[in-house]
Structure formats: C-alpha cells, structure tokens
Amino acid sequence: MTCVECQERLQRSLDGRPEEGASVAGHVAECPKCGEMHRAANRLREGLLHFDVPQAPRDFADRVVTRVLLDRQARRSRRQRWLVVTALAASLLLAVSAGHYWFDKRGANPTFVDPAPLADGGNKAPEEPTPAPSPRESVAEAGLAVASLSRKARDETVEQTMLLWPVASTPLSFEGLDLQTPLDPPSQSLREAGQNVSSGLEPVANSARRAMNLFWRDLPPMEPTKKQGS
Amino acid sequence: MERFQAEVYGLCVRLLRHRQDAEDVAQEVFLRVFRSMRRWDKQRPLRPWVMGITVNRCRTWLSQRSRRPELVDYLQDTAPSRAEDDSTELVAEIHAALAELRPDYRAVFVMFHEHGQPYEDIAAALDRPVGTVKTWLHRARAELLQRLSQRGMVAPEGDSPASSTPER
Picture (tube, rainbow over the protein chains, first blue to last red):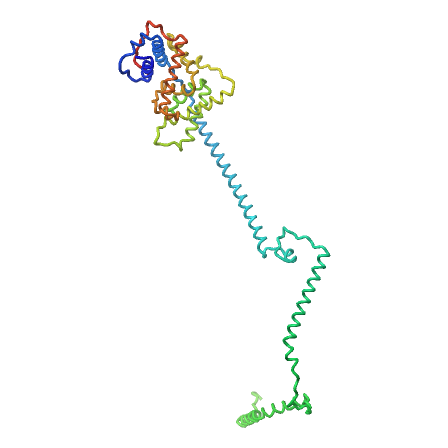
C-alpha cells in the first residue's frame, strides 16, 4: 500500500464510509508520516465528539420575528411612497403632454389663432414675430402693387373694348320710324285709361242698381208701434 | 424558523467566530429567507437554499469585516468546558485550526462534520459541483490534521490505534 492510498483510506474513514480491502495497519506501522496522520485523525474524531453546537440566544426567534415585521412595514410604506411618487410623476407627465398637444393644436388650427395675428394677415405662428419692414421696402412694395393694379385695369379695359368694338363700328339706321309725329303728353294717356275702366264697369253698375230696386219693392210697409200704458 | 435556527446560527458562529456578528448575520439570513420565500422553488429542498443564503451572507460579512479593525475572538473563552481530560484543549485547538482555514473550506467542514449534511446538499448550498466540495473537505481535513500534529495534540506513537471505526 502506498502513502497516497493510505491517505485516501483515511479520508474515506473520515467521511464515515466503511473501510474496504486490506487494512492500513501494516502501512501505518511502517510509515511514520502516515501513522502520524492516522493518530491526528483519531484525535480529530475525538474532538468533534466534544464539539458544542452553538446555541442561539433564547429570544433570538422573537427578535427575528420583530425584525421581519418591521422590515415588512418599512417595505410597505416604501412601496406606497413609491406609488405616490409614480402617480405624481405620471400626472405631471400627462399634464405636460396635454399642454404641449393643446398649444401645438392651437398654433396649427386657424380657429384658435388670436385676432391680433390674424389682423397682421396670416397663419403665422404667434411665437415667430416677423420683423417690421423698413420704409424703403414699404414704398417699393406699394409702388409694385400700384403698378400691378394699373396693369390689370388696363388689360380688362382692352378686353371689354375688343368685345364692344364690332357693335359700335356698325352705322345706325332710322328707316321706318315716324319722326314727325309728336309723342302723347302723359295727361292724355291717363284720361283715356280712366274712360276705358269706367266703360268696362258700367254693366256691373246697372245690374247692381236693378237688384236694389227689386229689394225695396218686396219689403212690407212699416207701421208705427204703440207705447204700453199710454 | 425553529427548524433551521440552530444550524444557521451555528454555521454563522463557526464562520464568523464572533457571537454578536453571528447573531446579526443569522437574523439577516432569516430576513432574507422571508423576503425571498416567494421566489423559492418548492420542488427543491429548503435546507440547502437556507444554508446557501447563510454562507453567502457570512462571506459578505467577512469581506466587510476584513476592511474593519480585527475583532477579538472570545469564542474560546466563552466555550463551555465540560470534559475533565484534555478534550477542552483539543476542541480549542480544532477551533483555532478551523479559524485559519479558508472560509469555503471551513464552511464545508462545519456543514459536513457538525451538521451532518451530505455532499449533495453542501454542493447545492454553495452552488458548486460535488467534486469541488469533496476536494475542499479533504484539503480542510488535511490542514487540520497537519495543525493538530504540529501543535502536539497527537498521542504518542505507542498507543495509537491504527484503524478506528469512523464516527460522525
């Protein structure tokens, strides 16, 4: 048996496994080093038998329970605090997003545009004020506008003239017209119109007169009534 | 909590070697267990999960403590002495040797020899392969044996039982 095998046997015996094969007694008796180790192993076994298992303090369990409960309470309050902070942050984020969206829509939609920017003429964003033009630029822009208007008026006049020119260029003819007879005065015309209306209404008036005469003839004569007590 | 209280606290004491620190860390472990209970996969065993949290918290605590001034280790002074022979001294030597081990080795040793956890549970708790856990445990034992031998805690050669039944 070699020293290595002897050490393996020693470890196996310390593991608590039963020894197998030949005994190490012969090798241990011959090898002082392995013999020393075997005696030390026996002392180790002896010492382990006297090992005292450390005992926890009596109130150890109570302390642990108290600590666990405190820890749970602390974690719960920490979780609630975290929830509150998260809710606040979410609300703030929502408010900022809504505000941003509203301002964006206000800038893009003309119905939300303030009257003052509209008066300035356009859908320009209020946050981008255009710089005021210099007097020289204003005069130049006004001149260009006047020239453009004049050009447009000239073109329209020319077009209308071109349309009317064929009619205006034909000579006027007065043949067939009685230019010698004077026109009727207005009073004569009105009198004639009244005579025509009265002649038209005459048969109607005669019929109405006859009907009234027949009505009066059929009525009984009226007698005076006596007063009672007289 | 009562089911794992002794193991969690004991592992914290062994890894941190300071009772007050161990109590604080053990409380923190249970706090984290209650906080993370919803995330725990019910198909998996609870014990390795709780012990894994314990080891991780102890590691973090140790790394934070390494930046602070060294604390006085008074565990040996407060350890109860019951035996009449040299077992008290032997236990103190083992504790001192344990304190010099790497935290990973120490965790594996304590979980295996004190709490009796199988390799698979330790591997699950430490999130390491079983082979790695075995290697760490073997190295931890070798260092402990070396230390006991150097400190004169080994019996003379004459009355050594060469092969003894394993006890755990």
